[in-house]
View (cartoon, rainbow, N blue to C red):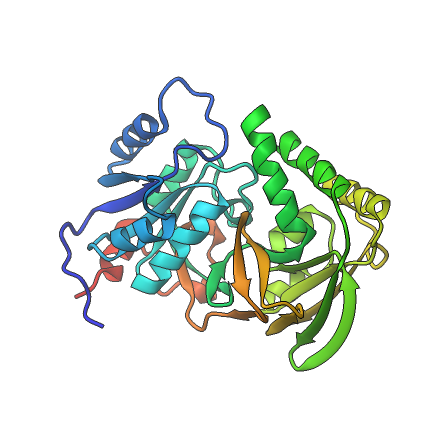
Length: 330
């Protein structure tokens, strides 16, 4: 496919979600980022999100319009959509984390404050990241079926009433579990191995950092290129509440409250034509079966220089500006 013409060789396109996370500063996010890009000698076009156009469409338009880099300024849902668009267009991606948890950015040592994140865009290095996909849609941290999509639906109401915070997010878990009815009936296939089970939660992890934060096994498997499928062993409301509270405190009972299996390709059959899937904090109905795999080509993400393993750095000591120039189409 022929590359779109480059309109400005130095331009960085920033997809700005002004409603993600919490922003207590007096300046607006747009004013803050405009000032920070100027202070770091970077030319950036800030593109706000509108209800009329999905995040992915906005990111695709920016990525295909000659930007040297597409940057996501928002939570993990925004970052996931921008990652998909950047990967499709073959351009590098940057991250300014502004969500509630920011697992993707934290796992790459990208600062959670805007000042530090913009500094990385000016001074960092490009690192190749393996992308997961579920039914063809990109996910960075996790994707799941069962009780977790219900938790996300409950969380939206809690956020609207009390504002966005990690405490509010954890409280939404308790409220959602109070409305739990019955577990899923699944046929699970992992790298060709099949099994039947009943579980209220099937959770596919793609973030080693997130697993380590919650004291769960499987981080090394993810680093080796596998996914980790967690299933809840508890089926009663009380068992789920207890397991969730332990998980939030980083005291999950390994092997007792959650079973897990690792593999490169995972397929979940739900015996229904469609299933509600949570993907990096966003939820959507998908046709079944639900298939998880890795995209063959990596995504290039700007990270702190010390976060780039030597084997992944295409040329030693390539400054950020030179990396952007190299990434541009001829």
